[in-house]
Length: 580
Image 1 (tube, rainbow, N blue to C red):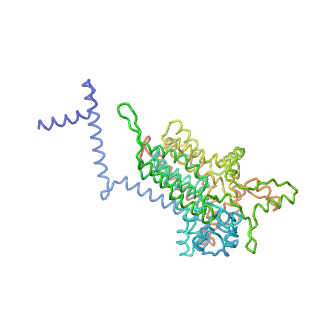
Image 2 (spheres, rainbow, N blue to C red):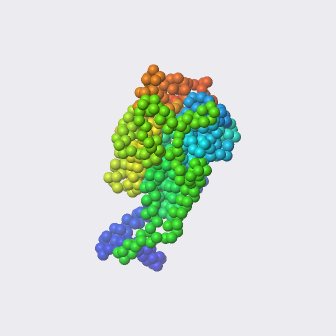
Image 3 (tube, one colour):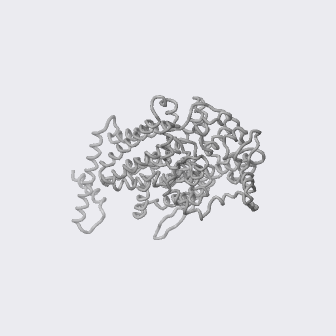
């Protein structure tokens, strides 16, 4: 007994920070013993509250996460645009598929045309019918029609096309692939937010806000590159901040290289991630007051994996344009295809119009250079378009992101880890597309170019909610702004993205002789005409309820679930922290 007590007190003594003051040492001993007894009691209590050996708290978390996943999947299924059928190129040129259908804009048609050519015709070039379907966003070179877009999106949706085709839903299956990337983005936002200290419930709300309260919703149910680009950025960030191994570095290099073949400007938005990853190639150690750096050869060689996606990109360019270094955006565009299959080139039409007006035509005016798409003199107009304008601006379409901006400022002041990386990517995104020659994104719903920035701002929404979740008035105000944002963006998701920018709407009104709407009121007019491009609405409920009723049901569903999650966050004990 004496030896047992002696060993016990010896173990207790060894856990103390050495002190010459015996009173201080006894106080430290009491604290350690109390903490140990509290921990034992907690473990014992958790065991008593378990079911079949699984802790009840853990079961509740699993159930909650499952219900959130089912909620998000259900909303996306109810919103995906499409109509039944496996259309041929000739059928695709009908209005039911184009202007009046799910393939309403040329960016969707151009990517779908390339996917169809690869999947069905085993070709990198388009037949005249397929080129006519993709016009005016189709390129013409060496006597053949080719894609005007980076290729990866079209390749990635091929599995969805074949699965959908088996069920007679080829186009719907293709669009569903983008919805899967949107779902993945929600969970990546959640995971990243938790890593910087956000509560899991706040992180879930932030993911829902990104997906359903920004223009990301309208582009999650159609065929655009934005959600795939966002996925690559978020996955690159997650690998960077979550792991520190050769495998994670290889994953980052793969994502950086692959991003270029998804959308060329992704090179700039992935650049901060690549630079940060380079810092992990070097290993720093402190010994005897000195810092030494080592460069493991395997970490250096991990960069070589970039060859795989780059080789794919160069191969596609070579097969399509005859030159591996040729970018599609620098090729002559065919804006129309004649009945005999010959192209009407954009440059020819512009020159003909200038000749008709008697204007001088300088040589080299129409030589395409990818750098000409960015002009610093366009910066102010671009910033106005993305943030303030009624036709695209953040204030009109997604004011919930203002909370993300506030959270970002707070995180900068508190020096939250990795904030500088997020700010760099957001900055590249905003500056790049504010200097873009077409900051409006053509005919579009909201500022589609800022979807990656919205995803990262959502991370800061989670941070802000975590810090202020005990303030009921703040949560109420947040809920009101989020509900407005959800209502606006659900309009785009269930109707159309064919909203002209204000500068085009004014000229269009003079041609049509009627007022051309250019804000989300254009989407409201679609509902007034009982138009919704949702596949579920068109296929199953169009004869039972109106488009307005469908929209109200979907919006209410999202808002009610969001309110429930917010109320759950409100009762979380203050100061509770979690780590993934």
